Amino acid sequence: MRKGRIIAICVAAALALLAWFAADIPFYTFEEPLSRASLTSVMDGEALSFTYENDAITLHGAENATVYGLTLSGVAEIPNGQADGFPSDSLGALAAVKPAYQADTDEDDVAEAVIDAAKTDMEYTQEYHATTSAFLDSRLPFEATLSERHVFTFTLNGSPLANAQIDATLADGRTVSLTTDASGASDALSINDIRGGVQFTYRPDNATTYRLNYCVEDNTVFSLRWLSAMMPFTLIILIALVCIILDVTLRKRLYQKNGLPESRVKITHKGEGFRLPRFGFEMIRWMVMLLSFVLLIWGGKLLGSALFNVELPILACPYNLDQLTSAGCYWFSHIDVLLGLPIGEILWFVGSFVVCAVLFGRMLCGFVCPLGFIQDVMHQLRQALHVEGVPLNERIYAMLRLIKWCLLLLFLGIGLIGGSFCDFCPAITLSPALAGFKTSIYFSGFMMVAVLVSGFFKRRCFCNICPMGYLLGLPHKVSLARLKKDAVACTECGACYEACPMGIKSIFTIREGKDERAIDVTTADCIFCGECIRRCPEDGALYMTLAGKRIYTASRMQFMRDYMNREKERSK
Ligand code: SF4
Ligand code: SF4
Ligand code: SF4
Image (cartoon, rainbow, N blue to C red; front, side):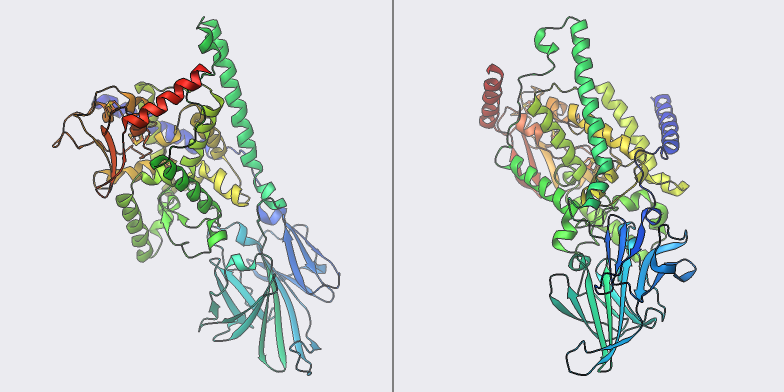
């Protein structure tokens, strides 16, 4: 036994090492934002402003304007306001300033000195936390800098503009009055408000007006940029489809060769087929999954940034800056970065993980994780197409456990040796792309193909090897969600084990406990999908509780209804 474990650990370590080398295999890479971006100045008589679409930055109303770029070595002038390739040390922020001129912009019939400027910030699209890109230079006298996507800091000649009144005119014509605090910051506007551009106006006195047009790139769904960001994921779907078709064709051939009956040779089967989730637990689970999927991809855009500091421990993705909450997976897979944070932030992360894991545990897998949802969708697709699934035996489950240990090793350890788990994580291919963020994909592209194909043939296959799922399952002994069994009602038919996507045999085999009518069969692997309960033919033999309250119970009546529907489908 001990020898077997040592061999397993050695194999896991070797596989993890192999995977470390595989990290750099590119699947679909975008050029660095600075090399793919271009800047063109146009003299179209419009107000001095930038527009920024699909890496093409255009400066409008460029007459007499001087264009500056922020570089590592300071503020640099961009000759003629044109740049097809930015300097290698460019930080991605651009500004244009016109010489002061006299005009009456406040309509008090007295002309004042007007200083027009424009600014755009490319870094917003690429960084985990939108970095501050402040020029802090008197050549851009009035400046606004976006940080953390919901705080603007205003400076005048490089110094914070404390307790100042600034008007912001939004793309829809609304004007919002901002008051800065002692550090020149205001959180009255978030990135959601300024996607179409914003003009800030500051009048320190009756004789001077500063105007600044600020813009970041918009990533609206179906925009050119969104379509381009979706390229890797589209490729992944196509490859997954080819793999699925190949598998079905090859299996058909194999079955024919082995002389299996005609019904098996067809690969398709008249089984359950597509069916709407049953009203109650199942319906609620699908609705929560769908809602979570939407919120964890576009939630920040839809509902604002109030929950950005909540770190959900699931495989969402921090490269998507539009999700409603943050993704705690980043800190587990970058322990080196986590350890460098102030102790308060480390405690906040660890505390919120423990609270989530104890309160909900792997219910987050069954109800919230976007990667779990996409696997369930693949499963439904297979059912709808009547394609036969691939059942796994115990030996394969044991192999999956080995792979899970490898991934766990990588997940927690790779950051400490200078690597990044994000190069392997399938979530990075899904969430940022759907939100319109162009993210280069390495080995994780192949992982996502495997997630889709395996999820098609075997429900939640990836969840069997997911390291985050494993960590969420650790406190299962104290978590509020429980799966219970009434050993008196159970007839040991084994339907629950057959239905379980995580291959948990103990729900079927355990028959003894303190109270035989309520034996706790919760395990670290259970994702609380409720499939075992749905498939159990005995009234009350299996049930799920949350904080002691029953939320789902096996019912013979429901089982019979499902059974009749399946039979009806078969006889068509
Ligand atoms: S186990 Fe599945 S559902 Fe849970 S975090 Fe991992 S991918 Fe998501
Ligand atoms: S034990 Fe039941 S609820 Fe848990 S994963 Fe298996 S089928 Fe889902
Ligand atoms: S499906 Fe229900 S009756 Fe059958 S073994 Fe599982 S718990 Fe027992």
